[in-house]
Amino acid sequence: MFSKVLIANRGEIAVRVIRACRELGVATVAVYSELDRDALHVRLADEAYALGGRTAAESYLDAGAVLAALGRSRAEAVHPGYGFLSENADFARSVAERGAAFVGPGPEAMEIMGDKISSRRAAESAGVAGLPGTAEPITGPDQVEAFGAAHGWPVVVKAAHGGGGRGMKVIQNPAGAAAAIESARREARAYFGRDELYLERYLAAPRHVEVQVLADSRGRCVSLGTRDCSVQRRYQKLIEEAPAPGIDAEVAEAMGQAAVAVARSCGYVNAGTVEFLYDSGRFHYLEMNTRLQVEHPVTELVTGIDLVEMQLRVAAGEPLPLPDGEVEMRGHAIEIRINAEDPAQGSFLPCPGLITALRPAQGFGVRWDGGYEAGDEVSQYYDNLIGKLVVWGRDRDAAIARAVRALEETTVAGVATTIGADLAVLRHPDFAAVAHSTNWVSERLDLPAAADPAMSDPAAAEPPGGDEAPRVRRDIDVEVDGKRFSVSMWVPDDAGAAAGAPARKLRSRAPAAAAGGDGQVAVGMQGTIVKVLVAVGDTVSAGDPVVVLEAMKMENHVTADSSGTVTEVRVAVGDSVGAGDVVAVIG
Image (cartoon, rainbow, N blue to C red):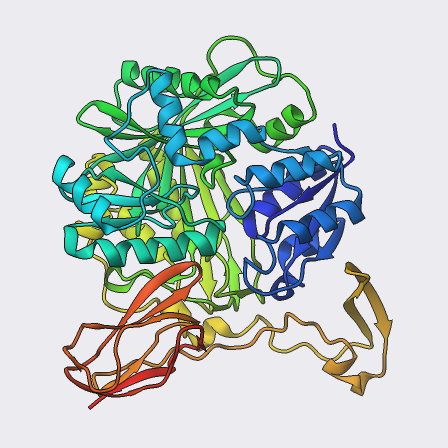
């Protein structure tokens, strides 16, 4: 086993890996951007190194900066988590060239499966069929039109090197092709550093079912059962469960065999996930994710297997310490993602800001995997996942009941969250009857119009016990040659914040301003303008898009609140805006 591991990530997955390493007696190294100097993963790690920059591209996607931290820390391995550089074959090679182990598959397998186009070819060679799709990256809307004419509308354009719904757009007809391609490229480039796209036939109401696989360097590859990830918004998952319900045992077994065949087709080693679309008793290969999945805890709870521990052991050259034969499944597990988003009326608008209170549920069969604590800031520059509430029950009904109870006991204040939407899903008879699909949330789920009250509740925003009295001892963080150290200083009582007052002091957050139908087109969240769609003199109708705002790696259309003529445009591409800022005026 390694003596020291660098975690090339942030948030809850970095915290998850740090905890697994600590249980194994392995020292941990964190890396962080300028905005994450005091993040939870930095506070928990044994060492931490600054990457510089604020955005993902300037920090966690900067392979050179991460590799420099690897060299300075002398870590023996790099765990990439998910997202960022986790599926970057060049980065994996660079780690190996520096004498460290990459906790994931080899770069050759990653190149085959990380590129969704070559992944489809590999699956077909293993006898596992997918939906009709393009065999080469697309370059323009003409290819979309030709594909739609051949296979029918709608079609979906996807990031060839992506996942998690990023860089994915459904195209209903030829008229929407150019805009969809442009938007998908921007998202893919921002989140994955590459913008190649491909096309696939779009199913109207499938379920998203995946299989967890584990493979070691001795040639052993096993399936750890299915997960259902069909509850989605914006093609990103909200709720996952294991095992996938309502699927015949024979079909589930065939899925597991297909997943192992796909993994073997590329010589896969370590943890990976093979994803399928399931419809009318049949499954179609979708893609293979060459990394740990966000939803891995549900598999851990029903199998009793620590997947991060398995990843580390396999990367260290050990054989899988699992018994021969099928892995025993026990009970049912559900994971609820709690994101900083306002789900009012199904909008799911990103809601960056300060978390003023955070109290996860407790009790039998309840687990919390979080990346934040009260006093931490959710930045517009990164994914908005606050944490994952995971429950286990003896069967699916018991797990659903426990999930509802746990969500009702969970408190998050200061930012709007998806808790209300999660409860609406879990309480819905369609979910209980497994009558939902990947489009069910947007098409069938009735979400309230009111914003999450936790976003602006003054009572919830106040920390328990009020403000603390100034302390004589001050604990501060300093950087020496890029390495982070925590030190204590004894200063006079009146030295104030300049002497090192805690950086995570709680403060209240005012609610975002609203446009209100007065012609003042305001944004509802902090973000960056990536496209301006109108000019002074243009005539618009209420509901027409005015600008495209990127927040937390998601693109959002800011629409006109009234009809009329554009008299002012106050922003340009690249501008940063805050909640309530007016971007255009309609007269």
